[in-house]
View 1: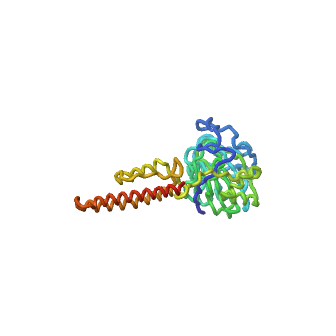
View 2: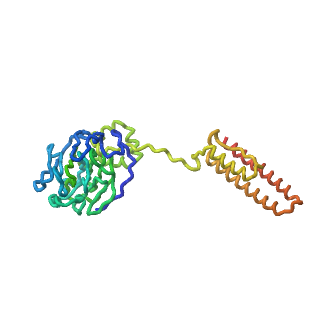
View 3: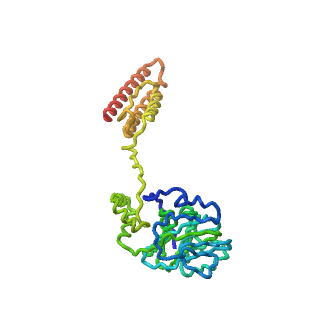
Length: 373
């Protein structure tokens, strides 16, 4: 198995606005203490349940209800790690997506969502406080702390989740990849190389009186539409064309809401440093003042600019280079004059040279200004 780098997500939602909170809705504010359970049905608008949780008589710390869609871990107190798995084995060459809603506050050693093989014995962990999913090579898990784990190897993956959070799981048994969603926002591929395993959905918890619910569980065979949606999601040009057809986006969202591409954030275009960057006049004037002080007030500079408020950066560079060349000539002449006798005429010659340089510089500035106009 291998961990993969988590891509930087630049997507935003199109139906619900994601925020920085861990909850999908604002109803989680009603859950204030341990043992309180979320009563709302937010995020349960797709009542598709192809499988539910499996009742295991060997596990005593699990209570199932609501047609085995709700699970309550450690109803009284916790003595270890309790877990439950799905009734249905996940077959190869099929896309699976299911969503888990957290109904209580999460705390303690760990609360995890993931998958595992049939070799995982759930009752073996009831006296151990641990991060069960991913503890060995037979399971893969996403912790409420934001980390993923497999074979005791952990790495930071996404944000923390708690009461009211929706944890989506997309298992692609065609490519053998596992991807998580937090409040229906994709977090990127977490694991690869799962295609040849016989997997079951699993959840585990060490927290007393912690509960969660399956809001939907569905599967789709590979289709050309699914492959096209995956391709569009990774191509900004195709994504822009896709959202230019609103009716197409609505149709795809109704059928593949968990794969429907999200629109990209509108980013400000990056300006080319030489051709498009525009500097404020006060910045240019400040540099002109410095040059005027260097020349001891003997030269007067006109500020060339394309409009009354700004100057083009290329014009600014041209002006700066021409002024730098003139400053070098003036500095050399001043050095020569300081070494000459005061009664001789190099001083007048130096003044003549400075006057000549000033005229030449003014001509250069005027020509640059005429080019801008």
